[in-house]
Amino acid sequence: MSLRNEVRRLGRRLLAVPQVRRAGVAVARRSPALKSLGRRALGVRAGTSTKKRAGKPRIDIRSGNMHLPGQGSRWPIVVVAALGLAPGDTERLAATVERAQLTSGRFRPLFLVDSGELAPFRSRNYAVETVMAQAMYARVNPQDSYAEYVYERTASIVSAYGARSVVPMSMETLDSMPGTVLRLMGALDF
Image 1 (cartoon, rainbow, N blue to C red):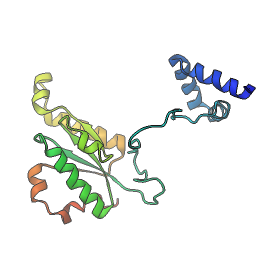
Image 2: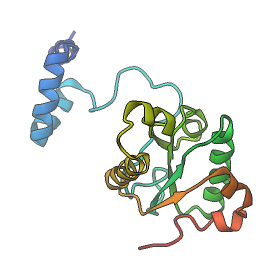
Image 3: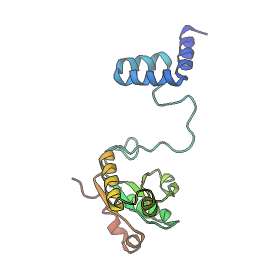
Image 4: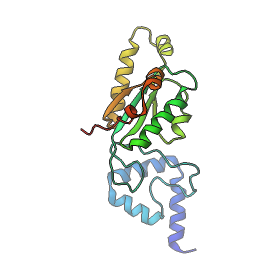
């Protein structure tokens, strides 16, 4: 075994120790030159493992990023706030917004829901954030307003993701809204 391979093997073993890995990440964040040196010396790239990741790629929802790698357009993030959905409604909501996105191709949805049904959004590779359901919030924090909680949580999500707009959505609205109107989500470019 060559000296280079021996050094790489030893470095990878050291990085398996959580305290050493955290210290290495902290140093690499402060010094791009050391990060580059570490990549060359260990033969790894940051954020990857030696094992292949199974399944779908990670969701990249940072503001203004490409929807698919290599595409040249920047899409605005639209927060779709759907609270008080009945069980099973999340699949219909995700499918309807997916059709609107595919027909216009002008926005990236970020769903805000108060249920635990996240699979319909995750299976489509959409980002989703949750808030407490109104009944649960009343039990946990009865003295505060649920509307204020949802407003503050939505504002923090908009700020964190750099969203362009918030679209409140209910199943009644979704059922009565034609697809041509749904296509307008994200159409305004500020």
